[in-house]
Image (spheres, rainbow, N blue to C red):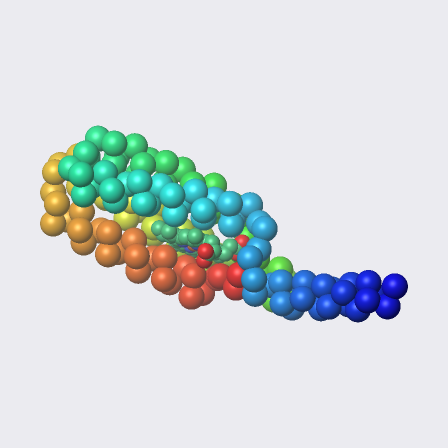
Length: 141
Ligand code: HEM
């Protein structure tokens, strides 16, 4: 009995909200981000294999996952208990980073269709920068 209580106490400490907040978060946005990761991988292997047509399909899927992500709030906003004007300002900043990412993806679609591989490479770099910016600013799990 004593042992069971000790185990329960350890388990509850290990999964307490502070520990969990910086672990994996089970949000809708997290799910879209996993889809985005998979689509990015598939798209870049198509580009390496020279299959632009298939790559364009993955870029279109990426655009739609970012459009869905735009109406979700990062976990950080509720964890930091953002409200009122602060929540409004942070939401606008988040949506701006998403919108800029969508603009870059649309340019990438054009560059793939035009067979402009130098531009495709540059735009890959720009997407990586958006990911770093988005994660640095809004990701806490
Ligand atoms: C192609 C670019 C991107 C990829 C491949 C990507 C991938 C991921 C992955 C795999 C996760 C899950 C956690 C992890 O493993 O680190 C994640 C989480 C997250 N990403 Fe991205 N991401 C990208 C761009 C962005 C952008 C542009 C933003 C913001 C505008 C963003 C915001 C977030 C946030 C806020 C989370 C945490 C989930 C939450 O708060 O609910 N990501 N991302």
